[in-house]
Each structure stands twice: as structure tokens, then as C-alpha cells.
Image 1 (tube, helix red, strand yellow):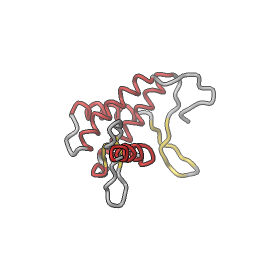
Image 2 (image 1 turned 60 degrees about the horizontal axis):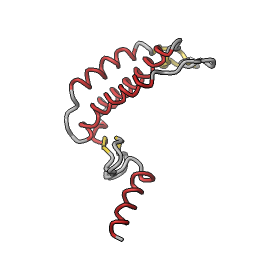
Image 3 (image 1 turned 180 degrees about the vertical axis):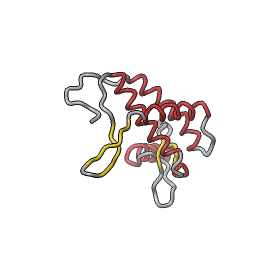
Image 4 (image 1 turned 120 degrees about the vertical axis):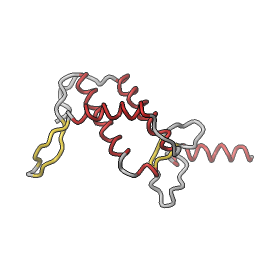
Length: 143
């Protein structure tokens, strides 16, 4: 169990945001077909190694599977969450799915997304938000 019912501590949001920026520094160039900076990859790798320490192999209904150690403090919760993000990021980095990684083309959005559409021609992270806004903006320019 990762979270205890009576947990009164919160993760360090500044640390989480800093790691999010590290992930962006690695994934944004990849979304453009460029190379990820070594510095970002090194930080992700180090954080991945620390994150693995939070995983434990347990039997669930007789089947072995991964679980997460319990957290006893804000510091531990932050480390575990960042570690989980690093594990997921490394799985994506080595998955072969980076061809599908794109950056949203909306003028006021900097999100990255995996284009799982049939033709791989998506432009926006969300059609209902960025796509609608961009189409409305173009329509206003025409009128």
C-alpha cells in the first residue's frame, strides 16, 4: 500500500514540478525528431534507479506482481512519486513509441502527447480544447 488512510502529509510540489521540467527537457526535443539532452537523460536515469527502490514484488491472489512500499513522510512520498514518474518515462523512452510523440501545435499550449490516431496526423493534444480554440481563431480571421 502506498497511501495510508490517515496520511496527513503532502508531496513537495516544487520537487515534482522540477522533475516535470526535466521530463519536458528530455521529451520536447524528441517530439521534434531531435536528440534528448544528456543532462536530462542522466537525471531521469538517476531518478529511475532511486524509484526502483520503492518497488516490491508481492503475491496478489497467488500471482507475483509489482507493488509500492508505504510512505511514512512527505519526503518519502515525494521520492516515491518522482520515482514512479521516472520509471514510466524510461519505459516510454525505450518503448519504440517515440515516433508517436508530438507537441501540440496550438499557439498557447506546450503539452506533449502520443498520437495514437490511425494516420498519425493529430496536431493538438486535445481536439475538444486546443483544436476547437485554434479552429475558432482561424474562423474569426476569415470573417
